[in-house]
Image (cartoon, rainbow, N blue to C red; front, side, top):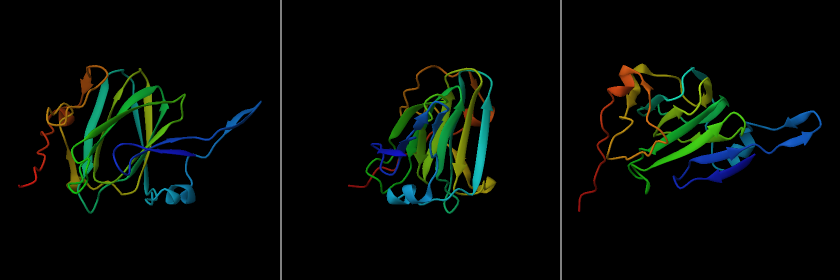
Length: 181
């Protein structure tokens, strides 16, 4: 696998290293040793699948409070999405910053999302499916969200969403903690 660290520390874009021949290709999409070599130690405890029939569907921005924070390995298995993460680690130099990555079924590209990040995506094509491995079990009491268009975060979505759940629409704005001088 090919690991590319992003500007948000601990978040990686991961591309498969294809071994191709006339049959197609073979590649690893998970290897505990390769992840550990990059300091990524969060074995999956759960796998989630999200199926989205309509282009313009927005899901997010979701996270779980400690000690139930989730590390995720996200891949689009059909169609295309714009995958977005926000660094919520108060001690991080990139606290409150976001990153967006296009993930497509054809690219096999993945995004490794550290714990204490918010996550969401926007479908760019009809019939887009997303599969993600998660390091923690879903804990309903720890579930939280941030409004997808919070001006304090300023995510630049590639298109206006056309379908958002009422629950995701009602997420509050994120209150960035400003250091005291």
